[in-house]
Image (tube, rainbow, N blue to C red; front, side, top):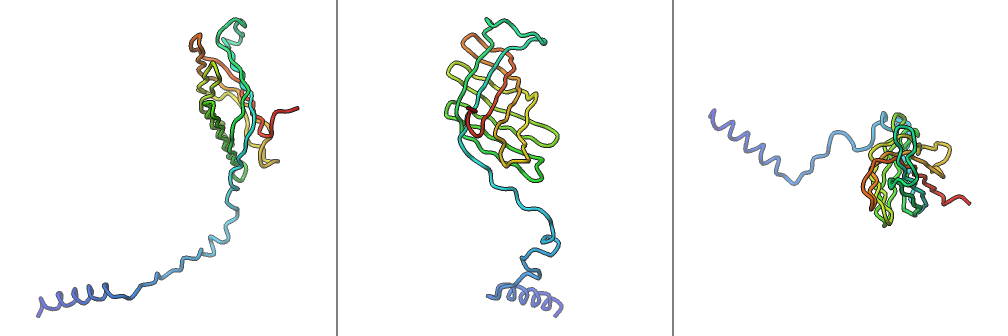
Length: 178
């Protein structure tokens, strides 16, 4: 009899769990009042578009510009597609630039740091970004800034070779100024 009771209990439990009856959860899937009371909205979707930019790469050695005959320089203007996202409360922004010419640059800024990464290519050069010195992509007074500018350091590769250089990248999100 002692062996029969545990076996019978397990059989009844297995039969009850295999029934066609569905079991509803104890709590509903609706948000609780604590979640409903949270302030804030989700961030807006990214803004996307086509825009223009100008890149100037130059060698810089210890605070003195090298001669203009130095092969460590390049410049180019180009068009690209961009996506821009500004999270609320205006303390984190992301800008992604991409073109068919081999350019792929992303910039992320928080209230503590700006980080720009990527590669810029022209017809006779490639500039690989290694460091961000300064810039700003957050414009809380407008949804998308009209112009952003970055001071960068990176590796410039041309027909003459490879060198470390500074660069200024100016991005016109609403087109080149007149």
